[in-house]
Image 1 (cartoon, helix red, strand yellow):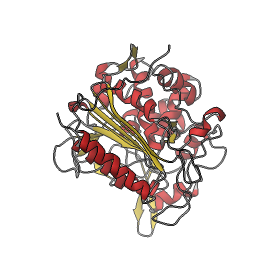
Image 2: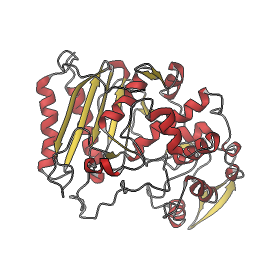
Image 3: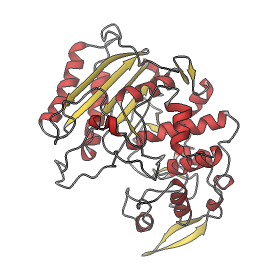
Image 4: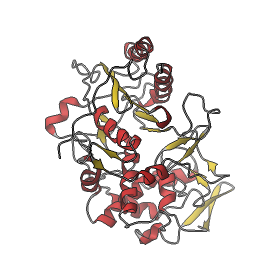
Length: 396
């Protein structure tokens, strides 16, 4: 099935102030002029139409090519929502339950130990219950990431060499199963390898590589033809690159290599994509699970994903989940009008990638927006700046 791109509409007819959109363009341009990042692609859609799509700057600091609107970016953790949708499709197909214990699919995760700080060292206690599929989707699994903190458990993850060459989803999960949990399952929100583990669950249940499952179930049906775990040779001229040296820290910038097919098809952060491709995915969610005659999920499954799934009293393990937000099944969910430091409606959902990409969806406004840059250290500033200026442009 051939699926066309989202249609373009008139920004003013869609409720945007042209002067405010010009301010947004100028703010991004200022970041380029000040060499915070080489270039950017931004997209805003409302009521099913693209109101604003803007490509600025260069593809990379070593390139004279202007940034094209179809530039391909490393989207890192914007992979997680796509994998989470694939999991929910398996739930709809009756192959999986959210309450299923992880060992049902991956027996190596049975009989887990939890690390407990004891003076200068660690002690270990039995996990009080198994990790569930719901835990993995909402990041309450007790797993952690090796790069988020310098604590003793993260150090164990780092020393395990989980990202070494030759790692696959299968070997990654077997290595994770040998490591202690950072927290008792279900007690804390800790950003982690949870979605990578879900990628392996998908592989086991479907009997094929994660890439094949995502392509068959989501990417091809939605016409996301530029989204993949690597960029083939005929498309490599469109790869957006960062500055080789971070303009703020002075350290070398090292990102995923997109030009070779990886052995690890990371469900937590391995995809490359474009603004137009990801726009189709977000419009599908905003529509309640379908787009252009293609049904990906049922409406009630989408509603379930976009509800806050964190129990009262859940410990929040990092500032990646800001005040005023809970977490659903793959997305941060705005639960209050106040508390958060930026604008948005209750029910807004968002996430982003470590290299600088981000999106947010506001169902109450019929709106979503995508910002794509490749600038790891600048991501938080420009993520919030982009969101503020998009909302500032709403005029009706």
